[in-house]
Length: 123
Image 1 (cartoon, helix red, strand yellow):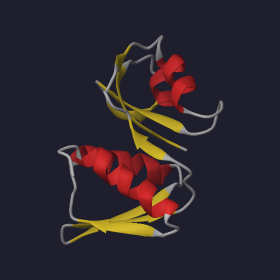
Image 2 (cartoon, rainbow, N blue to C red):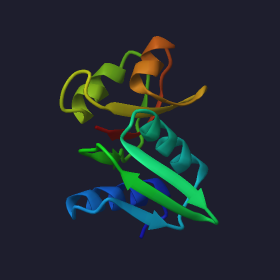
Image 3 (spheres, rainbow, N blue to C red):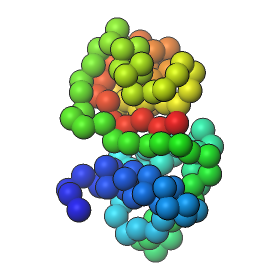
Image 4 (tube, rainbow, N blue to C red):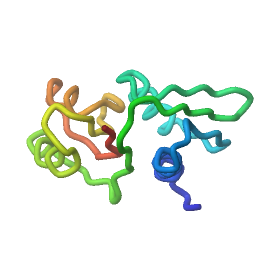
């Protein structure tokens, strides 16, 4: 295990999906991970619950979720380039960007005319 909780948990989710499991239970949590999970839940890809320090994530409709390493810092004009790089098709999936206004998807960042740091993607 590395020191990057976000990458570790997203890899565990992908491994569970490949093994045809419905979810994972872990004790690793951080604020960034919880915010990413909120976005994934908002778009219907997962369900999650935190009870007594244990994070339970249930996979619903997800093909892939990965952390982006290294975390590139991009301007508002470069978002489309990275969306084409990480997502398989237009209007299919989301790239999560950490902006000065908090975490948001690439679509929200483009609407608000913000750049930031690439964190993860899922579809």
